[in-house]
Length: 151
Picture (cartoon, rainbow, N blue to C red):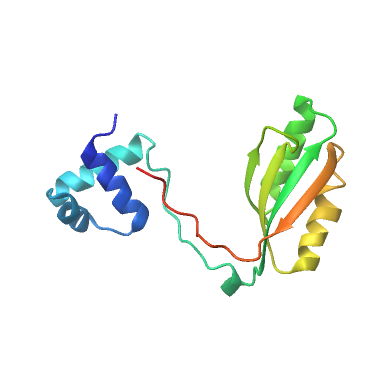
């Protein structure tokens, strides 16, 4: 169970994962050792899954962001597992969700350009034997970056 201090610590780390125990202690009005122990406990208990750098996609040559909806033609466990393996192998697919409704999967993709997105759809996704239909949407502008989770 999280207390108010844990929630404040998680909120602070989502905004800046580089905070030292000293800085966390100042934010939370705790000693650095208390703040550090709380962070370690939250990591050990799985509240904090890891730390990562957020890159600017355009600066590293990924100028096309898109969402791809995938509908499977067959829904057996073998087909789902095979498709999940395909998703895991493709670095262009940065997030994937299973859905209710018409589409079975929603994929978030980053590609260098439109031909790369076209190749992903027509040479990778559509040829998969379980895939019946693919629909893509290209992101024109991202109004809000992936935000911290509400705490």
